[in-house]
Image (cartoon, rainbow, N blue to C red; front, side):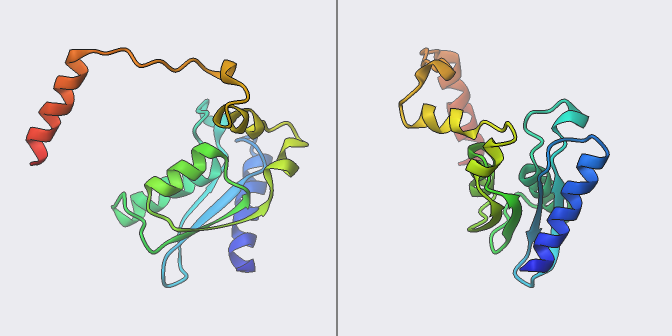
Length: 150
C-alpha cells in the first residue's frame, strides 16, 4: 500500500509546487494492483472547485479505461475524502478507500469539510438553501428519458 501512498504524495507535491491546488493527491488502483488513475488537487489551476484529487484521479481512470464504472478498483488518497469526493467515489462504484490524514488534520490548514458535515447533521442549515419547486417540464424531462432507456 505504501507505494500507492508514495505516488499520491508525489502527485500532491507536484501540484503544490506548480500552484495547482492544495496538498492532496490520489490514485485509483485496479483489481490487479495497477494504477489506472492519478490526480492531484487542481482547484486553483482550473478555477474548478470540484477538481479535488480524488475526482481528478477518478476522471483519469475513467478516461483511460473508457468507462464510468470503476467496480473492483480502490482509491488511495493522501487525506480523508470530503463529502463531494466520497460521493464521487460511490458513484464510480469504488468500494475501498484508504487515506492518510483525517479531515480534522486538514482543517488545521484551512480546509472546511466541517461546514458540510454540520449541514448534513442538521446543525447549520444556513450553509445553503435547498428547496423543491414543482415544475411539470422537469417531470416531463424524466418521462422523456424513461422512454429512451426502456
